[in-house]
Image: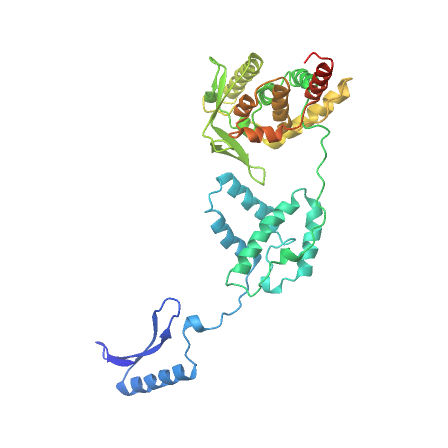
Length: 390
C-alpha cells in the first residue's frame, strides 16, 4: 500500500490485492486522486474492499456463463485441427463436411450449448442419419467438436451429448454386384468403350488408362502432358486432383501414399489412345484460341461428369449387347487391373509397386480374396496330387 505524488501534481494510490496462485504474480489495484486527502480516503476504501471481499482478483472471480454456439466451438477446434499435420486436401474436405452439413441449422448450426438437450440432439440426428451413406462418419467430426467444447472453460456442460444418443441406420449404399471384372468381362468392357467412345477420344483415353495402368482416378486427372514420355512409354505420376465436398477440384503435388512420384510403364494400346486424344485436343484448343502446352492437363472433365458417363456407357452396353456387363465404378477398374495380374501369376510385389502401395501387405489385404480362376487351379492341383502326379 502506498500513495505517490506524480509529476502532474496528482496522487496515485496503490493497494495490494492478492497474487495468482498459478503464476505467483502479484495483483495491485491503482487509483488516481487530485489531493492527498482524497488519496488517503481512496486508500482506506480499497483496503476495506479487499478485507471484506468486495475487491477480488480476476482469477478468483467466478466464471460467467456466456452464450457459446456450436459454430464458435467449431472455429476454435478447426484452428487446432489444421495444425495436426493433415494434408491440405483432408483439411479442405473436413471443412466442407462442416459447411455443407454440420453447421447447417437442421443439425447443429447456431445451437447454444447451454440450451442443448439430449432429446433435441437425438431428434436432429434421427432426421439426418438416414439421408446419407456416410452420416455416421460425419457425426464423428461433430463429436470431436462437442468434446472440445466440453473440455474447454467456455461452457458448464460436462458431457458430450453425442455420447448419449442412439444411432439409427444410415442410408444404404447401392450394392455393386461385382468389385472387379474377370478376364472376359474386362475384354468386353474394352471392346465396348472403343465402340461407345469412338468419337470421344478423351473418354476413350481416360478409361483405357484406368483399365490398363491401374492408377487412381485422382492420379489420372492430375496427369499433364509433360508427365508422359512416348519415346519410352512411361508416365511419371507426381500429382493428383483432389475433390472438395462441394465438387470443386484442386491439384496437389505428391501422391496419396505420401510418395513424391511413381513411374508407370504403359502398352501400345494405351499409347495409341493417348496419342489420338492429344492430337484432337491440340486441334480443338487452337480452334478456340487457347493452345495446349506441356503443362496442360490431359483429362479436363470433372470426376462427377466422368462417373455419369461411365453409368451411361454401362446402360448403353447392356441395352445393345447380348452379354451383359455388371456395373463397376471407376475404382473397380483399378481392382480389375490388379486382380487380373495377380490371378495370372504376376508377383505380388510387382503389382504393389505398380499400384503405388508402399507396403506389400496392403496389396495382399485388398486382394486377399481368391479369384475364380485361382480357385479352379487349386482344385485341379489337389486332383493332380491325388492321382500321384504331384
